[in-house]
Length: 127
Image 1: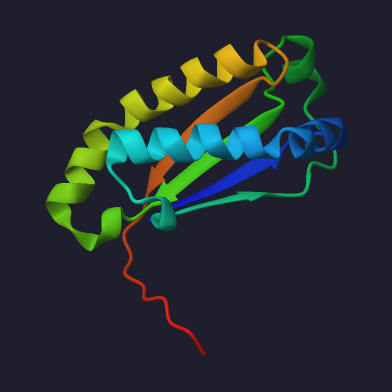
Image 2: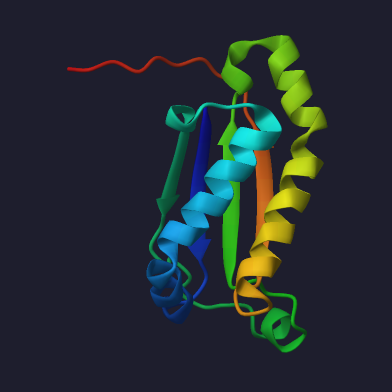
């Protein structure tokens, strides 16, 4: 499963993000499905509140601060070989997202993509 958290770094970015959220989700879901061969029902994409209290003014001045972070977290489903393939394709995934993002939004939404693989096992069940 790919669990995606989109974290806007300002309230203005959050508002902009909410206006284009369907497009954002489509870019991320289609990219993950294509590169990692993950079914759509195994991709969760959530937009978070802006939790930044005080942004780094030096990073902003230098143009190093993104408008939002896209964090993609996965365990690879517990299968060693599947996880290995996903890790090998992580850069390809980031570049595809970057390409589609730039095509859709240009320089308006500066973003960073962080891909994390964690070691865990879980189960989903209905109560």
